[in-house]
Image 1 (spheres, one colour):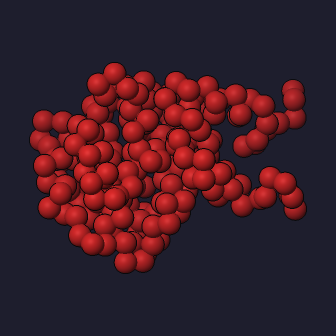
Image 2: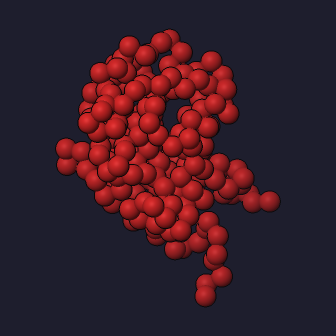
Image 3: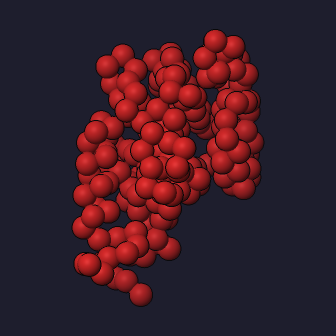
Length: 195
């Protein structure tokens, strides 16, 4: 009825703002799907050749694709057999001078034990990427999953807790990352000068 049928307009903006508030972040940037959210997150963090990203072995291929496409190397951590999440005590031994980020992927509604990972990222100067696609609405120690990463991603695919048929969202509290992701989702149009 309004003529807005794509990734812009008042309804998308309202959804971004409401979802970000529910997830405990300053910004929500809607994208076409969860894979696009991960792609933009990796690009916005400047991950590229010679970088390494530590991540779980048990996850969807989308989490690996953009790391490989960027020229970076995924470094895998095996799963905890009780939760299927990455086995947190294994992470520190995988860190090298080339490590740029740790990607946490919450599995089957069970949050990763993320406090030790946050502390590790702070101590080692690493970025934290949080894939919260399977924990929308879940909390870790009273705080929403998806609010811990320097940049976080979610998916609204039909098998997720909330679905829009397709769709995804990037979450962050970082002004510069939010602005960069907004550009990446829409052909890098400049908001002041469209072409």
